[in-house]
Length: 272
Length: 268
Image (cartoon, rainbow over all chains, first blue to last red; front, side):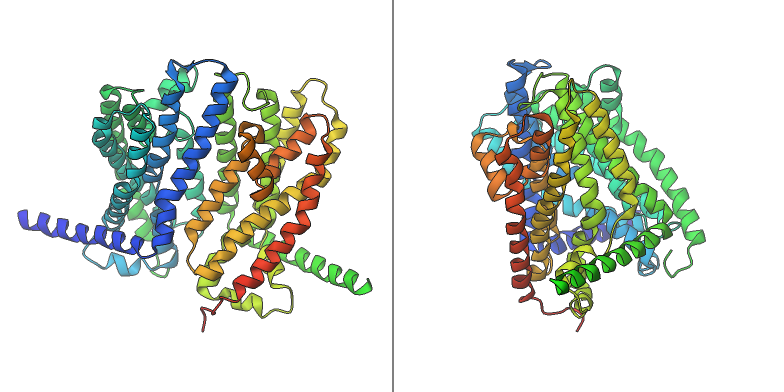
């Protein structure tokens, strides 16, 4: 038992390292991905919040002052970069569609774990490098930030990544039946763009929609971790986030296992 | 003059043939065809939801209220739909064409290579999005008090100008792939630059506003057509894109020729 876990751990660590090395290969590309893009997003969102407060002619919106929204805009851009999976989902779809998955399914490892470990490795290095920017900016501009809460917020975001990866796995299973489904990824990620709270804090939504959207597991990607860091939500919301994500991971993994089996049954070995 | 007309006819019929081929190809993958429409519907919802939620907490953003912002978004959807149908897919795939050596085939054809790389593939599935975007624009215009519908004629001139502005900027981002071979994230960077233009120019301070209307003219894409519809005509703003269009087209052509000097061909 102990030995098999050690093998499993070593194998997945190697996948994670592979992802780190391959992503750092093109450094300019990587630098733009993890630093320049979220910095630009932050800039655009901060300008929007300045305009919103100017139009509102009020010092607070929904009980929070302008600094809270600037802090949210800053952190959300960086958390959103971590919480989304584009590249690995495209790769997984491509493996299935092109038939190159043949070389993976004959190896003593799972397709799911192979890409999960790579995704985690990639996101780990992204977090280490990119989070320096909001930490320094929040400290320098004295934006409302509970620095001690950052580790729990990142833990929730990484836990949410397992759910994101499970959804990617479901989409790639669909590639067994449909030849060209990359637009599923785009549609799904755009939907998550709204549901995670990247665009605006979800507690600004009026009426019953607010509670419903926050209760969904997707709020654990951006709104809950960032809300926790910036003081919009407490630890109980974060715990609810962990529970909600756990439940979704279990359900979707069962669905994924079923779709994978069905997909392999219909797979001819030469691509979809 | 006669040769120019013949050339124009040749390129026009060539484009029509490529458009027809794209339509047939798009229909082949029907699930993808419908998800592409759905994708943009999510994008529209995201844009609308953002501003509708924000306007629950403020009266104005920049110079405009919620009704005017809906018109701005309607124009954004229409212009973006045209761009997505005609140009987007070609420039999106340029990096891959360079890496796989497909660019060789285009360069060897007896037609302008910039024309081919820009217009070879149309995304006909998104005609549905154009209909949706136009519907939203008309709905939002109906929500305005005393709107002068004759102002819609400005769009005949300003939408093509907006398309050229998007095209020129996106093209320069994409053509960097010829120089750097791998520049996917520079393409994502384009998306961030484009996002600046997806917000009304009045939201920005005077310096940023000047930048986005002249140096990096993303502010022209939607803000100027929206101003032409919503505000009394300011002829400087209306004719500035017309002056800018030939300059941008010239610059893209120069940049393309410059980038091609770095092309070493991947297929050999």
